[in-house]
Image (tube, rainbow, N blue to C red; front, side, top):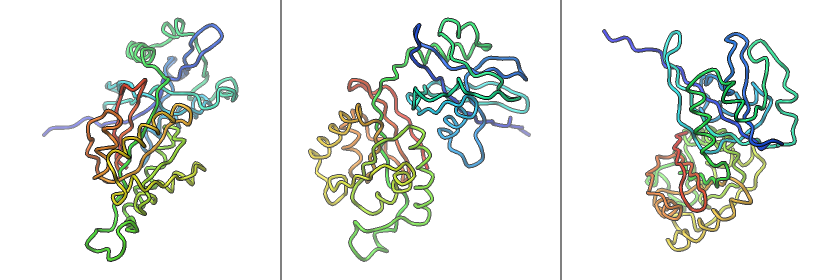
Length: 294
Protein backbone atom coordinates (compact mmCIF):
# COMPACT_ATOMS: atom_id res chain seq x y z
CA UNK A 1 0.00 0.00 0.00
CA UNK A 2 1.31 3.46 -0.96
CA UNK A 3 0.82 6.16 1.66
CA UNK A 4 0.94 9.62 0.13
CA UNK A 5 2.25 12.55 2.14
CA UNK A 6 -0.33 15.20 3.02
CA UNK A 7 -0.06 18.14 0.63
CA UNK A 8 -0.12 21.57 2.30
CA UNK A 9 -0.66 24.59 0.04
CA UNK A 10 0.50 28.05 1.12
CA UNK A 11 1.13 31.40 -0.55
CA UNK A 12 2.95 34.65 0.05
CA UNK A 13 4.88 37.44 -1.60
CA UNK A 14 8.30 39.05 -1.77
CA UNK A 15 7.42 42.72 -1.33
CA UNK A 16 10.03 45.26 -2.42
CA UNK A 17 10.09 49.04 -2.23
CA UNK A 18 12.51 51.89 -2.85
CA UNK A 19 13.81 53.16 0.49
CA UNK A 20 15.92 56.19 1.28
CA UNK A 21 19.14 54.20 1.03
CA UNK A 22 18.07 51.85 -1.77
CA UNK A 23 15.72 48.93 -2.26
CA UNK A 24 14.15 47.28 0.78
CA UNK A 25 12.27 44.03 1.31
CA UNK A 26 9.50 43.26 3.79
CA UNK A 27 10.30 40.42 6.25
CA UNK A 28 8.49 38.95 9.23
CA UNK A 29 9.77 37.33 12.42
CA UNK A 30 7.98 34.33 13.94
CA UNK A 31 8.73 34.00 17.67
CA UNK A 32 7.64 30.34 17.77
CA UNK A 33 10.43 29.37 15.35
CA UNK A 34 12.66 32.41 15.96
CA UNK A 35 13.09 32.81 12.19
CA UNK A 36 12.94 35.57 9.60
CA UNK A 37 11.09 34.93 6.36
CA UNK A 38 8.64 36.42 3.86
CA UNK A 39 4.99 36.90 4.82
CA UNK A 40 3.05 33.78 3.84
CA UNK A 41 0.44 31.36 5.12
CA UNK A 42 -1.79 28.39 4.39
CA UNK A 43 -4.57 28.53 1.83
CA UNK A 44 -8.00 28.43 3.49
CA UNK A 45 -10.61 25.94 2.31
CA UNK A 46 -12.24 27.29 -0.87
CA UNK A 47 -9.73 30.16 -1.14
CA UNK A 48 -7.77 30.79 -4.33
CA UNK A 49 -4.01 30.73 -3.90
CA UNK A 50 -3.65 34.29 -5.26
CA UNK A 51 -6.20 35.62 -2.77
CA UNK A 52 -4.34 33.80 -0.01
CA UNK A 53 -1.09 35.54 -0.92
CA UNK A 54 -2.43 39.08 -0.58
CA UNK A 55 -4.48 38.20 2.52
CA UNK A 56 -1.50 36.71 4.32
CA UNK A 57 0.74 39.69 3.55
CA UNK A 58 -1.82 42.10 4.94
CA UNK A 59 -2.56 39.98 8.02
CA UNK A 60 1.10 39.47 8.88
CA UNK A 61 2.41 42.96 8.08
CA UNK A 62 -0.48 45.41 7.70
CA UNK A 63 0.68 46.12 4.12
CA UNK A 64 -1.84 45.89 1.26
CA UNK A 65 -0.34 44.67 -2.00
CA UNK A 66 -1.19 43.48 -5.46
CA UNK A 67 0.56 40.61 -7.17
CA UNK A 68 3.06 41.09 -9.97
CA UNK A 69 5.29 38.49 -11.64
CA UNK A 70 5.16 34.94 -10.23
CA UNK A 71 8.27 33.49 -8.61
CA UNK A 72 9.30 29.85 -8.32
CA UNK A 73 7.35 27.94 -5.72
CA UNK A 74 9.12 26.45 -2.72
CA UNK A 75 8.47 22.81 -1.82
CA UNK A 76 9.82 21.14 1.29
CA UNK A 77 8.89 18.51 3.89
CA UNK A 78 7.20 19.60 7.10
CA UNK A 79 5.73 17.73 10.01
CA UNK A 80 2.83 15.72 8.68
CA UNK A 81 3.34 16.26 4.98
CA UNK A 82 4.90 18.25 2.16
CA UNK A 83 4.43 22.01 1.95
CA UNK A 84 4.30 24.01 -1.29
CA UNK A 85 4.55 27.79 -0.98
CA UNK A 86 3.55 29.81 -4.04
CA UNK A 87 5.27 33.19 -4.26
CA UNK A 88 4.84 36.35 -6.31
CA UNK A 89 6.60 39.66 -6.43
CA UNK A 90 4.33 42.00 -4.50
CA UNK A 91 3.69 45.69 -5.14
CA UNK A 92 2.53 47.99 -2.34
CA UNK A 93 -0.84 49.51 -3.30
CA UNK A 94 -0.50 52.69 -1.24
CA UNK A 95 3.11 53.59 -0.36
CA UNK A 96 1.84 56.37 1.94
CA UNK A 97 -0.31 54.07 4.10
CA UNK A 98 1.10 53.25 7.58
CA UNK A 99 1.55 49.54 6.78
CA UNK A 100 4.34 47.71 8.57
CA UNK A 101 5.22 50.77 10.66
CA UNK A 102 1.81 50.51 12.35
CA UNK A 103 1.77 46.71 12.64
CA UNK A 104 0.64 45.39 16.04
CA UNK A 105 2.72 42.35 17.13
CA UNK A 106 1.04 39.09 18.10
CA UNK A 107 2.00 35.56 19.10
CA UNK A 108 2.37 34.42 15.48
CA UNK A 109 4.28 37.43 14.04
CA UNK A 110 5.99 39.70 16.52
CA UNK A 111 7.84 41.88 14.01
CA UNK A 112 7.22 43.05 10.44
CA UNK A 113 10.09 45.15 9.14
CA UNK A 114 11.47 46.67 5.95
CA UNK A 115 15.13 45.68 5.65
CA UNK A 116 17.80 46.92 3.22
CA UNK A 117 18.49 44.18 0.69
CA UNK A 118 22.04 43.41 1.83
CA UNK A 119 20.98 43.09 5.46
CA UNK A 120 17.84 41.12 4.56
CA UNK A 121 19.95 38.53 2.77
CA UNK A 122 21.79 37.96 6.06
CA UNK A 123 18.62 38.10 8.17
CA UNK A 124 16.74 35.40 6.25
CA UNK A 125 16.93 32.14 8.16
CA UNK A 126 16.50 29.70 5.30
CA UNK A 127 18.67 29.12 2.24
CA UNK A 128 15.65 28.69 -0.05
CA UNK A 129 14.35 32.12 1.02
CA UNK A 130 17.64 33.73 0.07
CA UNK A 131 17.32 32.07 -3.33
CA UNK A 132 13.78 33.42 -3.72
CA UNK A 133 14.99 36.91 -2.78
CA UNK A 134 17.66 36.78 -5.48
CA UNK A 135 15.03 35.75 -8.01
CA UNK A 136 12.74 38.61 -6.97
CA UNK A 137 15.57 41.12 -7.32
CA UNK A 138 16.14 39.94 -10.89
CA UNK A 139 12.46 40.43 -11.67
CA UNK A 140 11.45 43.85 -12.87
CA UNK A 141 8.34 45.07 -11.07
CA UNK A 142 7.45 47.68 -13.73
CA UNK A 143 5.38 45.33 -15.87
CA UNK A 144 2.09 45.66 -17.68
CA UNK A 145 -0.39 42.98 -16.69
CA UNK A 146 -3.16 41.90 -19.06
CA UNK A 147 -5.57 39.18 -17.92
CA UNK A 148 -7.32 37.29 -20.71
CA UNK A 149 -10.51 35.62 -19.45
CA UNK A 150 -12.93 33.26 -21.18
CA UNK A 151 -16.54 33.62 -20.04
CA UNK A 152 -18.03 31.13 -17.61
CA UNK A 153 -20.33 28.19 -18.27
CA UNK A 154 -23.36 29.43 -20.22
CA UNK A 155 -26.64 28.17 -21.64
CA UNK A 156 -26.12 25.96 -24.69
CA UNK A 157 -26.74 27.41 -28.14
CA UNK A 158 -29.21 24.62 -28.89
CA UNK A 159 -31.32 25.41 -25.83
CA UNK A 160 -31.34 29.17 -26.46
CA UNK A 161 -33.97 30.31 -28.96
CA UNK A 162 -33.40 34.05 -29.09
CA UNK A 163 -30.47 36.40 -29.87
CA UNK A 164 -27.24 34.50 -29.09
CA UNK A 165 -25.63 37.65 -27.70
CA UNK A 166 -28.19 37.56 -24.90
CA UNK A 167 -27.37 33.96 -23.90
CA UNK A 168 -26.70 34.06 -20.11
CA UNK A 169 -24.51 32.11 -17.72
CA UNK A 170 -25.73 28.96 -16.08
CA UNK A 171 -25.79 28.72 -12.27
CA UNK A 172 -22.36 27.04 -12.54
CA UNK A 173 -21.14 29.98 -14.62
CA UNK A 174 -22.38 32.50 -12.08
CA UNK A 175 -20.48 30.61 -9.40
CA UNK A 176 -17.38 30.81 -11.59
CA UNK A 177 -17.89 34.56 -11.91
CA UNK A 178 -17.92 34.88 -8.13
CA UNK A 179 -14.68 32.88 -7.91
CA UNK A 180 -13.07 34.99 -10.65
CA UNK A 181 -13.52 38.20 -8.62
CA UNK A 182 -10.94 37.59 -5.84
CA UNK A 183 -8.34 36.50 -8.40
CA UNK A 184 -8.77 39.71 -10.38
CA UNK A 185 -8.58 41.63 -7.09
CA UNK A 186 -5.29 39.92 -6.20
CA UNK A 187 -3.66 41.38 -9.31
CA UNK A 188 -5.07 44.82 -8.62
CA UNK A 189 -7.13 44.76 -11.82
CA UNK A 190 -8.00 48.38 -12.50
CA UNK A 191 -9.76 48.16 -15.86
CA UNK A 192 -12.54 45.76 -16.87
CA UNK A 193 -13.05 45.28 -20.62
CA UNK A 194 -15.54 42.75 -21.98
CA UNK A 195 -17.36 41.50 -25.01
CA UNK A 196 -20.81 43.06 -25.18
CA UNK A 197 -22.39 39.59 -25.01
CA UNK A 198 -24.35 38.80 -21.85
CA UNK A 199 -22.34 35.71 -20.88
CA UNK A 200 -19.09 37.72 -20.85
CA UNK A 201 -20.58 40.70 -19.05
CA UNK A 202 -22.03 38.43 -16.36
CA UNK A 203 -18.60 36.84 -15.87
CA UNK A 204 -16.94 40.13 -14.89
CA UNK A 205 -19.85 42.02 -13.28
CA UNK A 206 -19.20 40.59 -9.78
CA UNK A 207 -15.63 41.89 -9.82
CA UNK A 208 -16.50 45.25 -11.41
CA UNK A 209 -19.16 45.87 -8.77
CA UNK A 210 -16.96 44.66 -5.92
CA UNK A 211 -14.04 46.87 -7.00
CA UNK A 212 -16.16 49.84 -8.06
CA UNK A 213 -14.74 49.86 -11.60
CA UNK A 214 -16.77 50.75 -14.70
CA UNK A 215 -17.40 47.89 -17.10
CA UNK A 216 -16.41 48.63 -20.70
CA UNK A 217 -18.55 46.58 -23.12
CA UNK A 218 -16.98 46.37 -26.58
CA UNK A 219 -18.77 44.79 -29.54
CA UNK A 220 -15.45 44.04 -31.28
CA UNK A 221 -14.76 41.40 -28.62
CA UNK A 222 -18.05 39.57 -29.26
CA UNK A 223 -18.40 36.70 -31.71
CA UNK A 224 -20.82 38.76 -33.80
CA UNK A 225 -18.65 41.89 -33.94
CA UNK A 226 -15.29 40.13 -34.17
CA UNK A 227 -12.85 41.33 -36.84
CA UNK A 228 -9.22 40.09 -36.56
CA UNK A 229 -7.56 43.38 -37.49
CA UNK A 230 -9.83 45.33 -35.17
CA UNK A 231 -9.16 43.04 -32.21
CA UNK A 232 -5.40 43.30 -32.74
CA UNK A 233 -5.56 47.09 -32.77
CA UNK A 234 -7.81 47.14 -29.70
CA UNK A 235 -5.54 44.85 -27.65
CA UNK A 236 -2.43 46.81 -28.66
CA UNK A 237 -4.14 49.98 -27.47
CA UNK A 238 -5.19 48.37 -24.17
CA UNK A 239 -1.63 47.18 -23.51
CA UNK A 240 -0.28 50.67 -24.15
CA UNK A 241 -2.87 52.22 -21.83
CA UNK A 242 -2.19 49.64 -19.11
CA UNK A 243 1.03 51.49 -18.27
CA UNK A 244 -1.09 54.36 -16.97
CA UNK A 245 -4.38 52.70 -16.09
CA UNK A 246 -3.03 49.55 -14.48
CA UNK A 247 -3.73 45.81 -14.84
CA UNK A 248 -6.51 45.13 -17.34
CA UNK A 249 -8.85 42.17 -17.81
CA UNK A 250 -10.25 41.30 -21.24
CA UNK A 251 -13.21 38.88 -21.21
CA UNK A 252 -14.17 37.29 -24.51
CA UNK A 253 -15.07 34.09 -26.40
CA UNK A 254 -13.19 31.03 -27.62
CA UNK A 255 -13.23 32.05 -31.33
CA UNK A 256 -11.91 35.55 -30.49
CA UNK A 257 -9.24 34.63 -27.93
CA UNK A 258 -6.57 33.36 -30.39
CA UNK A 259 -6.43 36.86 -31.90
CA UNK A 260 -6.29 38.46 -28.45
CA UNK A 261 -3.33 36.26 -27.53
CA UNK A 262 -1.63 36.87 -30.89
CA UNK A 263 -1.79 40.62 -30.29
CA UNK A 264 -0.04 40.01 -26.95
CA UNK A 265 2.67 37.94 -28.64
CA UNK A 266 1.44 34.76 -26.97
CA UNK A 267 0.36 31.42 -28.43
CA UNK A 268 -3.32 30.58 -28.03
CA UNK A 269 -3.76 29.27 -24.48
CA UNK A 270 -6.96 27.31 -25.32
CA UNK A 271 -8.69 28.43 -22.14
CA UNK A 272 -11.53 26.47 -20.61
CA UNK A 273 -14.72 28.32 -19.69
CA UNK A 274 -14.07 30.44 -16.62
CA UNK A 275 -10.29 30.18 -17.03
CA UNK A 276 -7.87 33.09 -17.30
CA UNK A 277 -4.33 33.66 -18.50
CA UNK A 278 -2.39 36.38 -16.67
CA UNK A 279 0.18 37.83 -19.08
CA UNK A 280 3.01 39.95 -17.66
CA UNK A 281 4.67 42.20 -20.24
CA UNK A 282 7.61 44.57 -20.24
CA UNK A 283 8.54 46.65 -23.26
CA UNK A 284 6.56 44.33 -25.49
CA UNK A 285 8.25 41.16 -24.24
CA UNK A 286 6.38 38.48 -22.31
CA UNK A 287 7.98 37.91 -18.89
CA UNK A 288 5.53 35.32 -17.57
CA UNK A 289 2.16 33.70 -18.19
CA UNK A 290 0.00 32.26 -15.44
CA UNK A 291 -3.22 30.29 -15.80
CA UNK A 292 -5.98 30.12 -13.21
CA UNK A 293 -9.28 28.25 -13.45
CA UNK A 294 -12.22 29.63 -11.48
